[in-house]
Image 1 (cartoon, one colour):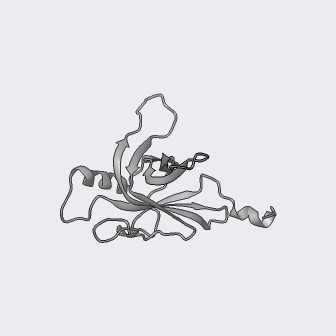
Image 2 (image 1 turned 60 degrees about the horizontal axis):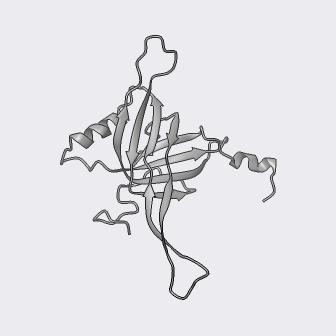
Length: 172
């Protein structure tokens, strides 16, 4: 595809993104940083008898890294409420796993790509460093582990927990 100024609006920059927790039609929180969203396949290698000029390679199980989200401290408690459910589970509420949609936007404000993180739950939270002479913003950090990943060009802000999973929480 040849470059033209008409295509410039389709390019995205890394600072234009929102994070949605399943079921929300509005961004759940605005973050200054999202890192660690990645996938790596394990590789199984073997040699086949009689084939001496090449190695056979099979794709193994996927491995996902933890996602790290950073944001300035606000009065929005959506993530803290979720974290407190991890160590104080309440049988009358849904499980601690949630689908998270991370959506990047082009300069025109149109959603370009959506990563839906399946079965995510918080595994770490870090408060901002408190320094009397500091001149920077108070930033909190949350880390999420997750089971699966879907990528699309349609914005999936209303994903449900069983999206990509069957009734017994297995991928189907």
